[in-house]
Image (cartoon, rainbow, N blue to C red; front, side, top):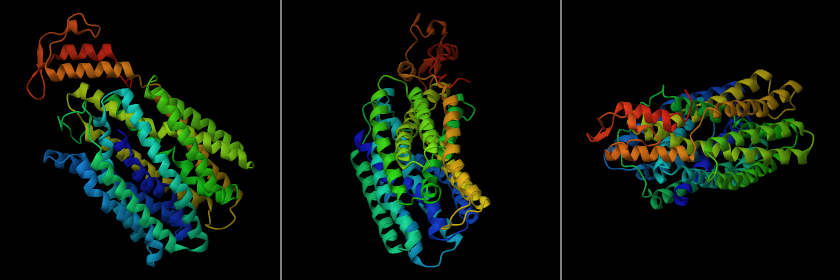
Length: 479
C-alpha cells in the first residue's frame, strides 16, 4: 500500500505545483491580461473534459490486451514529466503567445491524465476493506503533503522571483528537475506496487458509460465539483493574498509551509480515526475544520501570527477534504457494482477525475475573469475593491464550498460495517450461492435464482431488491 501511495509524491509535485502557480505564472511572469489567462485556463477545462475519458478508454483497451494499470502508468510517466518541464521553460524560450501557452498546458494535462486515471483506479484494487482504504487515502496524502513542502519551498518562491527579477533560467531548471522527479517516482511506484489478495479480477463489465442516474454516482459527482472548484481557491489565491492583501510577498512561502505542516498533522489525525469512524463522517468534519480555519484567517489579515495559525488549521482540515474522497470513491465502485451488476472501476474514477480537474480549471478561469473585472494590475498597488475581491475569492468561495459539502455528506450513510456486509453479498453473488433463508438481510424473500454476467446462478431480482433495502449499503447516498 505504501508503494502504491508513494506515486502521489510525483503526481502532487507536478499537478499541485502547476495548480498553485500557473495562473500567477501567466499573469505576473508572462504578462498576460487576467481575461486572457482565464481564456487559457478555460481551454484547459475543455481539454480535461476529453483527456480523462480518452485516458480511461486507453486503459480499458490496454487491460483487455493484458496490460494492467501499472504498465499504463509507466509508459506515460516520461512524456508527462517532459510536458511539465516545457511549461516552466516557456518564459526562457522567448516570445510567447496565448495559443502556445494553451497548447503547452493541454499537452501536460493530456499526458497527466494517462498517468492519473490508472493510478487512481488502482485504489479500488489495492484493498477491498473500507478501513484499509481509509489508511491508503492517508498514505497518499502523506506523500502529497511531502511534495507540497517542495512546492512551498522551491517552486513557489522561484515563480515569485521570476515575476519580480525575471530569473527565467532558474525557473526552467526547476521545471526540468521536477519533471524528472515525477517520472522517476511514477516508474518506481509502477515497478514495486501491486494488488493485494483481495483485488478484483480484471474488467468484469468495466466500461466508460457510468450510470449517471444512480444516487451514489450523483453524490460523488457533486462532491467532485465542490472539491475541485471551491476548496482549492485558497491555495490558488494565496500568492495574490500574500503579495497584495497583506502586502508581505515573503509571507507566501511561510503560509504555504504552515498549511503543509497542518496537512501533515491532519494526515496523522484523520488516518488514525479512519479505523473507527466512517470516511463520510470524517470528511464532513474535515470540511468543518477548514471552514473554521478560513474564518480565522480572514479575521487575522493584520496579524501575521494569526495568519500562520489560520493557514495551519486550514491545512489540517484540507487533509481530510483531499484525502478521503478517494476512499469513498473506491467504496462507491462496490456500491454501483451491487446495484447494476457491472464493476465500473475505470469509468467511475475517470468520471470523478473529469469533474474534479475540469471544475478546478474552471475555478482558475473564474479567478482570472474576476480579477480582470475588478481592475487587477500585476505588480501594482491594488485598489481596495480589488483586495476585497481577492479575499472573497480566496476565503469566501472555499468557505461556501465547505458548508455545502457538509450538507451533502449528511446524505452519505455507508460506514465500515455496511460496506463489509456489501462485500459479503457481492461474494455470494459472484460465487452463485443461494441466499440463506432467515438472514438479517431479508433474503428469505428471494424466489429462485438469477443469472450473473458470466452465466452463473445468482440472487433473484426480488432478493436483490430486498437486500438493497435492508443492508443500506446501496443507499450510501440517499436518493
